[in-house]
Length: 316
Image (cartoon, rainbow, N blue to C red; front, side, top):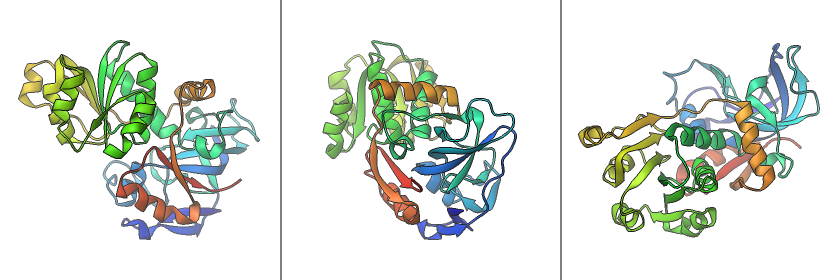
């Protein structure tokens, strides 16, 4: 099968199109004929070796954790899917090497969900990791209707889903982004905050009493530290980058911090897909590249300014 893989860590130029064996069919595995694969920041971090101390890696290493396609085969213990079903999945495993930038992908049954019926499979491939990250981050913050949440990185893949889910819950959302993304953030229902300007002043103009929670999806330690004086006493913050350091002030004011690392969860993905089919959740697609241009897709993502998600097209 065709696959985009690397034989050693390094830059985008290390990604090669290879002819590799199809994945094996385990008892609880579904083998998917991939139509498309989502491209995520985790992919280029894996390519550069940044996760080498967290997971076993096997070369040649096929990149990718998101897939949408058609079920080709099912293992003997699989009960939820059968050949011909259209599915999408966050296909993370306990090792790295058998990813989704390939014509065929092995997926654990519990990680998959029936594909949306209102969008095509290419667009559906943009959903799994980013939408699950957004939902699990919001859950970690115990957000409720009527609260005010500051989202750092609101125009990216995870950010776009987060803003929509929060707005749908009845939350007031303030989202940082570039000036070019201000109208886009408004279209999602957020109050745009220019990340190049005075964030503190802008947030205080909207939420003078402070925000109830903060989601760090892109800014890292600087964004978290900037947010501390903007948070109400006892407020919560989560980050998908690392455990937030709230410093002495945060500890004294009872602020709560949480690191969120997304988990594969087919049932939860199914709930998010239901929102897409109901029209309450849009799937933000920045653009597509053919599998053979996976290196260029990585360059585009790493260059920044991506609104929503990038997807690789693989099959029909």
